[in-house]
Length: 122
Ligand SMILES: [Zn+2]
Image (cartoon, rainbow, N blue to C red; front, side):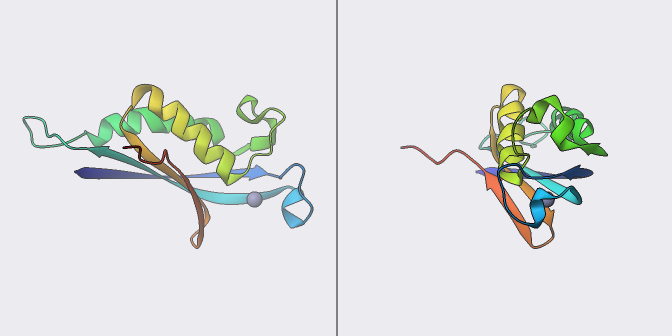
């Protein structure tokens, strides 16, 4: 099995809804996103998936969030724009054109991340 990982960065403001604490106040993050794709076959060039194809799908999503106040975007209308919500949102959108996406991780800092994935089923 092969697993590809593509990392991207963006900067956004947000504040959490229905939350008591510092994160309820508007603040910013330099987010890091890691997208993982698992495949078990190689093409004639012996690559599983071209990174440029991963970038073509992920970058338009990241561009929607970069230098924005997440709370004002339609993607998060009425929702608390947590890293968890964002990871699931990106995973589900990627899956439409990248069916082998296996995990999306959102880092709010270098030491704090949340990942969304579908548990393996047998
Ligand atoms: Zn935050």
